[in-house]
Amino acid sequence: MSEKVRHILSLSGGKDSSALAVFMKGKVPEMEYVFCDTGDELQETYEYLDKLEFFLGKKITRINADRPFKHYLALYNGVLPDARTRWCTRMLKIKPYEKFIGNDRVISYVGIRADEPYRTGYIATSERVRAVYPFVENNIRKDDVFKILEDSGVGVPSYYQWRSRSGCFFCFFQQRIEWVGLLERHPDLFKRAMAYEKSDPLTGERFTWVEGESLAELARPERIAEIKAQYAKRVASQKKSQANLGLKDVFVEEDTGGAPCMMCQL
Image (tube, one colour):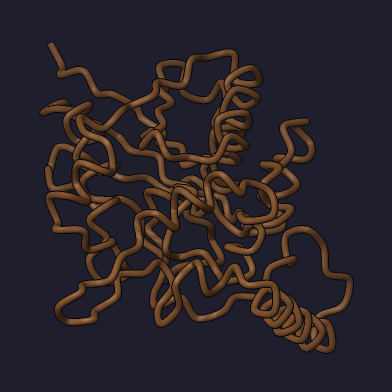
């Protein structure tokens, strides 16, 4: 008797993994859809997952971390995660996911597109997990992803109106303009993120989400105006070389210190 193989598609709440779920609907009847829920996602993300679940006609399993972010923050002595350490992804996403799959043989469906060969998805520590890339195999690119979501009626998450990717509300990969968006749309969450920042009274070392700038400093009206002006300038510069910008192009990247965590933001 052959060993059972689990087929798992992990969703981040972002466009690529969501489009992959739509694309794969009905192709693998035994597909499991999962979402690693840190408990600190945007409300828009949860709403979008409910919408996607309705379309799929299949439950999306929520995998919860065994401890909240605050627990691990204390464990790391108040040092916030950043592009180098990324302990939040490891402790709140990867470990719970690996516990969920156990020692089972798994085929993991990853939403990396054909136009981004430089990206890698979740790298399994077990040889019993094999990743497959349907978008790469079918030459599906960024424009195709948006078409898949639009044609299905699922559309894109509403947070794309002001944010370029999924992830926790305090994700350190957010651009400054996105922190401004969080402040304007979710001031309560902005205050919660701000409360995690601190300074060492002995060394003067600061632990902030944005390198070289606290959220309290970023939230000053004059600073907000400056950030918006700088962003508008970047968008105007891009428009000179790219005509007909749509929703998929609304965000012009600033340097946030590395590539985003794929398990959080694919």
